[in-house]
Image (cartoon, rainbow, N blue to C red; front, side):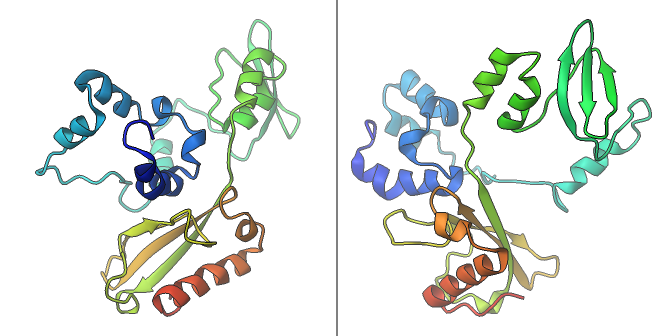
Length: 236
């Protein structure tokens, strides 16, 4: 708002941040989420000039990318040829203790001793595990806010989309009434090229009424909205 004005925040930056990060711009930190913006202003003296100069017309890479075939391939690849690693599947850790070594207590009653423990969990879940051995860190993690999100996957025939439909996806404006989703994103083409895959993101913060519905009703709300706005026929 300070850099580019209230209108820019309301009409462009606000909806973009809302659709991508599912959070209100006034509750998020530029330093944490967009550190390059702060660096650009500090080094060049003007954020807008630095932003324009950094654009490379020859650069074609997009901002979003994933693995071919889906992210589940990553887990499968990590499991291959790991002869020195013992994996414990479906073994939920419920508590930790720290003495000379770590003890990881599992829901089935077993305890695993370890020299080191790496916790790769959402902050609230990590806080629960660390409440005993590291209460200070657990308290810090417990203060991190998480907003819930629902993703609705859809596949449309190319011919079902009307001309002018933003087939790359879009974010929902905050001032356009009650939308059933915060953003709609193009995930990609099917292998035969006949269909497009979309994903609608529903935020508990921005669409609390839709978020509280059962799965089938959520799907109907999203499809009803797309049909009313763009006369899109039901997906495959």
